[in-house]
Length: 499
Image (cartoon, one colour):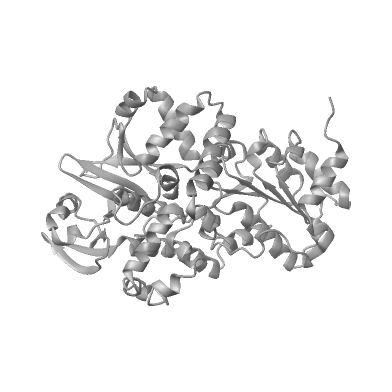
């Protein structure tokens, strides 16, 4: 049996790294694509060689990880780094199958006579397809302290679970989530058009962002965001927008369900996993009961629990735990909520939404939770008891007491029918230290001065709230960078609230 020759491997290395021939003046892939707001702090970490660690960039498929890698390569070349000191490898490429990371690095060293103390930048794209990748990457970090290793991975199950065990102290992990609504508006050039007063400082933030130039236009773009706006490539492609099921379902969802997870975990019944995910996607935002789900799907509860772990680790879903009206977690909880990490997945599976679609309420809630993926700032739960429910509850990490709550609606009805706020009133009375006013989202109404049964409320259109939340989280990245702090997108500030 013939083995792939060394000459073929070297030829592929040269093909994947065209800057070796063209130098800094040559064009490279994606260099003109818009940069995500995560790029500056990510690239700064690549330049910071003080810590002897590999950088592992994780996230769902098609959110821009590979593009961000090419942007970093472009920035390195522009900064004067020798082109032959930069190596890019996509481990999905068949010619690299079965090769160890060290062997590939050795080929790179041989090509240009690189020494152990050379300052090199090595990018491994889709690293999870290499068996025991974390062991090999840790070995490279230990062996070549002057080299900067950067890896990306889409099937986060392997990355998150294994890196915590084998890469402790050797990896700095970053999460790149789908686009926020604020990023989406920036990408389509509509942020200055639709947000009528520019942000200048925190003191003006609440006032300025409550005023939009045209709420109907903003809502229309919010629906577009729900349908396809979480994926950068879809934002710029009319073809994808006309047929999101072919792009999002086939190229993103199916690859994870039918290839990535089975290969990583040895899932035997692929159709069973696919059927469960489809059920969860259709019920995004609904409460799920494990016993009922097991009975209706004819899948054992332990198997469902395992599948949920896989789907969550692969950034397809997010599971939210339930608390009661006293903010206490249930001892034997069998109910929870499932949210798609990107609402665009539902449109790909079940058809596009419009503003009057029956699913808009739940998908608005899904979109709000999607914004929170851009931070680990709050421990989020939902509350439900016999006579009421609260959509979002943030608990203090220190006291475990509720800090703030939000009721998510895609309707103006609660502004007129105040009885729909009674659950919030009851929760406040049982938890008097909650921050007020309580925020309630609407479809079009903005009203900062509502009082019902001695509890203060602020009404804000859901599209504005999603924008504010996403913009605030992204601006923290910029502010931290301006202060010279070294941060990852996993920002942590447990005391914050979402205005």
